[in-house]
Image (cartoon, rainbow, N blue to C red):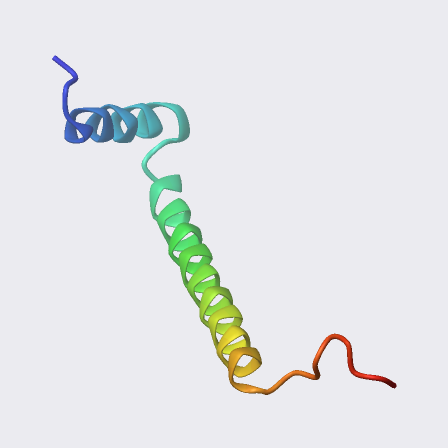
Length: 65
């Protein structure tokens, strides 16, 4: 009966409406969208920093100081 992810998604949405009411669903979706956007920004920033570090030459490990 609950073999696919679509079935579980429908159950989760119905349960959310029953527990939180229909007025909270748009607020939840908005905050979820903002969270995903912040996560993507952070991931892009880390990837950019890693590329910069990979392109800059580093000093040899056994070089005298």
